[in-house]
Length: 176
Image (tube, rainbow, N blue to C red):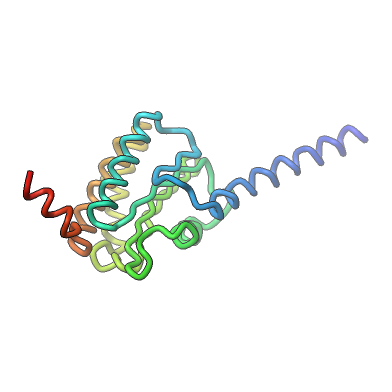
């Protein structure tokens, strides 16, 4: 009987620890744009996406972040994505120009959460279309980098209409 009780306590501890993992991820502001807790991207792929997202932020002030986790752990996808966007402070204060690509790989759930400053340029229907066309076909084939790369390119093309390149970035482009 003691061994059954010990096993039960051990299992409950493991379950509680796992649930806290997503809480920690949500509440801890990362120091990078690409956060692959699901371990589906190679280091090189994550670095390429990171460089792309940092360059876009530097050029336009629009911030895009990617969060990949194994599971939602029973949470609501939309509420969790919104909580992450706000807790992490993705986007510039006052502009609300942040974008989060959030995927729970094992749950096969994906959400693109858009900051209020970009909802006219990227309404939910366009975000859903990007998921359907750019992400899902590649994620089904486990080509996570390709899907995320295509999705970020599509999002950048839409976001740049609302938040164009900064003047100094635009003049550097013209002078080259």
